Image (tube, rainbow, N blue to C red):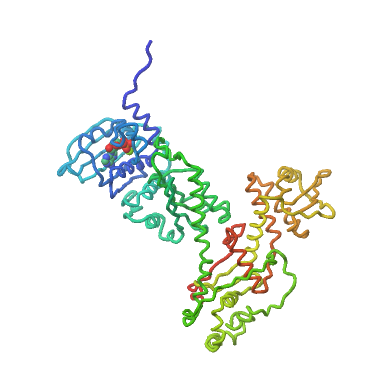
Length: 606
Ligand code: ADP
Ligand code: MG
């Protein structure tokens, strides 16, 4: 007995619809993409009851001739692909000719469309669960409008499967925003039950992002740009401090198509490593332009993953472009810093022969050593500060006479031309910790304690990757009360710990520390071991790199001390060393090392 049947077009469309149209948001996505492909400059979306009752999309694109309109609901009817070669050159969103057929098979659809050539009337088509019920001439605007009503009316299982209106509308909103962010050259509007949700005009990307996410997002955007033969990348990443606890605004686009890519996402996260806490998520809007032949276009219509031929290169280009952009942004105070000399030079001196600044570096200076000797603090730099009535025992008389002293003291004004004088005069160490410096935009404040942590971390990390850290052997092994799990976790990471300078033995289930890194004081040893044990036995299993970061951070935490900076030379070397660190803006724990108190902020305090 023969048992094989050919499925009717209606049934096969319904089956296909199950894949292409999962919820009202899928309809919005497909119809938006069709409108974009039709070259629209304005697209309006009106949704009722999260798309359950109706989804209406109006565009001013090319429209369809009456013949095209009659066949557009047929499966595999497409104007975007003619032969197999075209598959590799596709610039359009769609090409499978499946969406309209799928949508029509599970809803009541009304299409009105008119091309530019049709001067008077266009075409109206109605489809009822895949069956055409009307096909006639109609009066309509140029372009296309499609209304999709009663989605899944003939697939009750699907309809009951839909979530709450809030959840379904949020899917619609997401799909809408993805298309809107990909096409800044098009104006878009979205309403829900008559309420306007978005209404955006064509404009640049920054404008588009702020239109969608609010004007406040503007100041958080750091531009990125990289043009190579393989790929061009542009867009924005959010400043580290705007990173959120929940994954939110993370967008990748390739050739104006939204996509997800865990590998590229990793590159972004890596660029933000140490700038934000591990639990925070940076926002990004990153646009790739790439030869269409270098990406796999044959993706499933509902899938957002895309394969890249040169993914590895793109990963490194992406990573470096973000790092560079963040560097530029973080480095802002240091640029400011360099400008300050010219800013302070009196006008009359500017015409004279400039004196080349001489930077003195003391080769024997070690910022990590504890500055035991209490040097006389009445150095030339402090004297210079006094000259300006700045700080020092807050002598109110000096404050009152501040301007007078400045005006009178011609000699000291002349001295401003000496770059070193100028340099030191503008530094002031508060409470042995905060280094204040006069910069163009206000006062730069460096937390020397965190700065020291950063320097120590960089030094240890650099040394650690090439050779073991210097260790000191304890005179007597130190017994520590670790439980069996903690002991096991130390044993598991034995080689890494050895590299850090720790050696230990276990005797009668008792943990005995034999040596520890040379940079740690024996008295700080206990807290350091506690920190390391916590890292080693955390439930999240860190990889080797992460572990090294955690362990070195724990070491740094115990080893960093309040920095004692006395002479101007010490301060200078300290700053030079800090600014030579790759990441001088944040300590290894992600906290800022420097802050600028701007003139505007100062003014608001008075
Ligand atoms: P695809 O987009 O993959 O080609 P669809 O089923 O989404 O398939 O659409 C079928 C065809 O209908 C498209 O190729 C296009 O020619 C036409 N079409 C659909 N929507 C529009 C529109 N808004 N404006 C003009 N033509 C459209
Ligand atoms: Mg389509």
